[in-house]
Length: 146
Image (cartoon, rainbow, N blue to C red; front, top):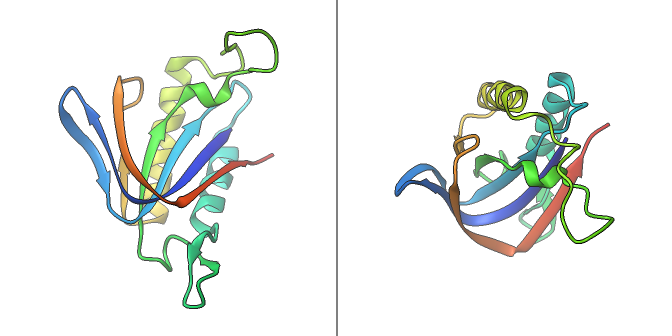
């Protein structure tokens, strides 16, 4: 399981002209789910994201997590994060979890995130999403858990 985190001043997801999720200051999380991933692994990753300190504290250092920074989370499924890109000129999506299974796990992870953090917005799994964001910094991290 992989998560690409972007610290944002604002972010939103638009599907067919309608905004499905929108936050101001916070974290845009692109989440990729692999064939071997489990709900336990996903919950561990969400817990890490919620505790990850990459917001500026009172001393201007990356010392605050999203809660301390009074931010929001926009959680967006992105199977392309699971692509193998080491060989050739075309991504191999073989490591990604099949769509039906990934959708069920994504929905469980959205529910889990909402149970742990009050300000969660989402995209729509499998939809053609237009993601608008203003990256703050820019600050971007790739997280994985074992």
